[in-house]
Image (cartoon, rainbow, N blue to C red):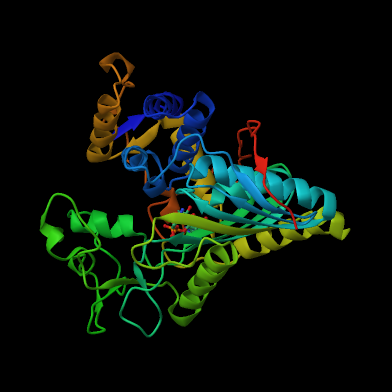
Length: 405
Ligand SMILES: NC(=O)c1ccc[n+]([C@@H]2O[C@H](COP(=O)([O-])OP(=O)(O)OC[C@H]3O[C@@H](n4cnc5c(N)ncnc54)[C@H](O)[C@@H]3O)[C@@H](O)[C@H]2O)c1
């Protein structure tokens, strides 16, 4: 494992995207949000994706330089077509538009369609929270069919993430942000490579038996260097039995069908669709009540006696704040393989050796994954809880308005 300074990593990754055809601002945004995901502790959606994004650019699946196109525009509603441009351009753009409308009207909804991978959905709830807004996001990862519905054994759903953000003045927001699949596919990949085994019931085989064997997902490619989830006959299960499966279905219907992206299906060009709702608590005239009641309730929840081995009840968003504090201070941890694949992609794109950031090998003392805090007895108290989360000021974004309703 290596650790790399976050800003050096961001500069390095941004240069890679410039070299494959992104303009300066776009390259910086893609790198910024990828590193930001690492900082939040969600490595599965961090810089490890950079080589894949580069490949998608080369294959024409992700298109640099796309301008978000507003296809429907009312005071409270907009549809934004991403034209398969970078999600790190489209997601922030859709969010800023939703914030603008909600600030004026108290409430807004934005349907983002046909975006390339938007990465960590929590980024958008954090941007909204920094503007003082509550937001809810339903997302499809359309074209990626990995998850079996409750009661079924065949893949029918994407990992369909769901996210809710609640602002807290002067503090990091309360932020629930997860895939509706039992585990992210990245975790199955890690398990297939001999890493941490999958939890009980994560997968289901074609006969309906629960499984932890990544073979169910990767089939024969489970023994080859490059895993291909199209080769397995099994599926990932949705989290939370019928309830999680139902939430995943709603993410497909709202993030997919309602946005015009289309709910997931096989042989579809990958696209994220995101249906976001923004609410301004100030317009509900509860400003004297809301913030105080959120604080009171969070404190009440956290005051619960803990189970054996757990020091503190965490609320959603706290593990990310902890991870960010650790990683800003000590660097972003990356597996040797992940780092090697990033350096290889950068070299292929034409990066000279001199640009490679300094690597802190060995990474110092072991630091438990803060995302497992509260589930992992090894974790200490939340020293960074309540850390004000810096979100980059948005860069101005041009767009075309090709219609209205
Ligand atoms: N763009 C896409 O197509 C796509 C698809 C799937 C997932 N994602 C992203 O992947 C990321 C990871 O998803 P995931 O399902 O692996 O997340 P996860 O299982 O790690 O769950 C994260 C959520 O659980 C909360 N949490 C974690 N530990 C906690 C604890 N001990 N106590 C209280 N709350 C706790 C976190 O604050 C966070 O809200 C998310 O950011 C998601 O948006 C994106």
